[in-house]
Length: 327
Image (cartoon, rainbow, N blue to C red; front, side, top):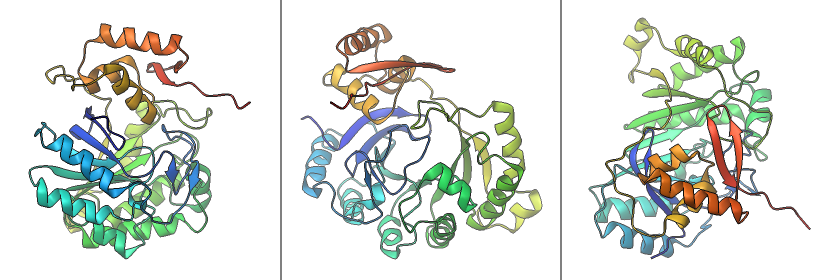
């Protein structure tokens, strides 16, 4: 069965073996982040709806999970904001009831936590990975480019409210854009917000793949280490916190050659991965746990047929979908 809404399982750098579930069409989102590896937002909205057919998702999940694959997490993510899917709560309950052996994770841009129905929907999840890229409004507008009505203050307030109601782990991701949200003042504001939100982890990230805007580049490691030290709550602060926040820097993906590549056409699997995020051959090899020579042959064929193109960045050569020229 060819899946429209599922991707993977892949080896995730944070979640182990992860089966992704796309709940909105690409690229339906409430933000248009300058660093987004999925490209520019084409459907700009903060309204919830059944953007894809619920029954189709259930059919694909039943087909995939009936084989009892080894999966560490089923992850709601993809090329858009998953909390915009209005039947998310129903979907979570279905999986928890019918496939209780699997853990569920949400990767989200945090824009919808001001909606009580969204928080109600996601309370049964095992893990939430929200993002927070700015505290001051001018930096928020520059980095995240939100749709009308969203503010940095509302996102922070929503995260604080989520923490009060959600008892499982929250790993808060902060994407550092050099010269934008890495100033002393913004770091100070981040620190104050972290003390209020109390995530279990703060994970610092920076550009690793081609983003939406060409001027965005990676933060250097020493700067990230300095930011991590400044954001880490002190021992006295940790003593007073219910949730003991630890600040880390997200590492590069690990390769795991012990997992066998999933059944199906390798060409289609590679296109599916690259459609969602540009990747190096090492990334693809690690995520699919396949033979690098075989993957290289497929990538070369996809480039020769103008489906993919290459971009050289400090971490290596990234393969991404070729941009189409409007006629």
